[in-house]
Length: 242
Image (cartoon, rainbow, N blue to C red; front, side, top):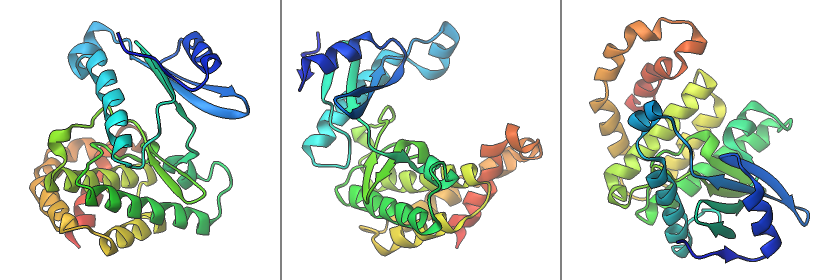
C-alpha cells in the first residue's frame, strides 16, 4: 500500500471520486490534476508495457525530482492508484497555438524560459525522457516539466540529455510543421546555456538517426494529418546539422 500524502483531506476525497485516467478538479479556488493508472486492453499492454509500472515510475520520479529541487510539480495528495498535482499553467503546445491569444513576445518568452529550464535540468545531470511541448507548462516565467512516465535514472547522462534535446525539437517541429520563431529562440537559448557539450552530443545523436529518414520516406509522402511526425524527421535532421 502507498501511504497517503495530503494537505487537505477534502482534496483527497474529491480526487478519489475522479474515475478518468486524467481529471481536472477545482478545490478552494485552485485547479488540480488527478492522474490514475491507465487501464489498457491486452493489445495495448503488449504494445506499451505494464501501465502499473509506468504509473509508479512517474510517481517515484516526481517524488525524487522534487527532493532535488527540479522544476516538477509537487504531489499534494495520493493514494494506491492515483496522485494529485497542482495546475502549472498552459502547456507549450497550447501557447504556441495561441489558445489564450498569447502575443508573439509572450510566446517567445515562454520558449526561451523553457530552453533555459531544460539546460538547467541537464546541468543537474537529470534528463526528462520525453520533453514534448504538451509535457512542459509555463506560467508567469515559471517552467514546470510534467509526465515522467518515460523517466529513467539510468538516462541521467550526457547521452540522455542529448536525447532530450533532440526529442524536444523533434516534437516542436512535428507540432508546428516547420521551423518557427519560437523554436529558433529556444534553440539559441539552449545553446547559450548548454551545461556541457549537450548540443554537440545531440548533433551526434541526430546524425546516427539519419537512417530513419530513408526508412520512412514512403510514409512522409502521405497527407499531413497521417504523417505529421514522420514529416518532422528530415526537418529535425536538418535542424541539428547546422
